Amino acid sequence: MTDKLRFGQFISEKRIQHSMTKQELSRQIGISTAYLSQLESGARSNPTIEVLDRMINKLHLDEAETHKIYDLYAASNDTISPDIITYLKSNNIVTKAIRKAQENSATEKDWLDFIDQLQK
Image 1 (cartoon, one colour):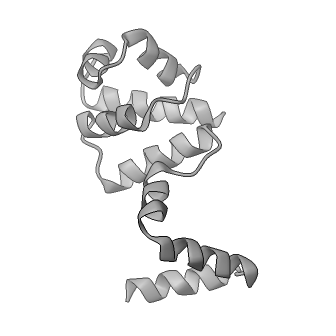
Image 2: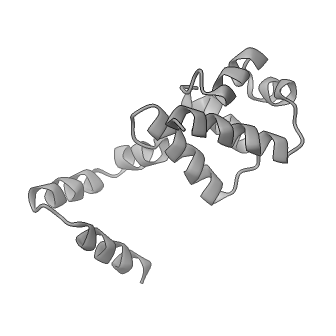
């Protein structure tokens, strides 16, 4: 299964869980029903971040589901999750930390230790 299809299937599953038709969701988020169909089928995978955020809102996605749709969006568009981009842009120190980790060849264990420290 391709990343584009996984992204579209996630949208479709959430829409169906909320008993919404394609027409209802597309109207509520300001896109055509044809475009929503293309997103769900994997034919397209690049809605604007504004459309993606309206979709998250109208589908009442919780934090874990929001992270999942952002990650699926990123994978299907060969990019970084939109929430991560926003965080990076608003926190210059994060960019410095990533560069330092890169310079020092940080391992997965290093990152897991860092995450553990953040959770304390």
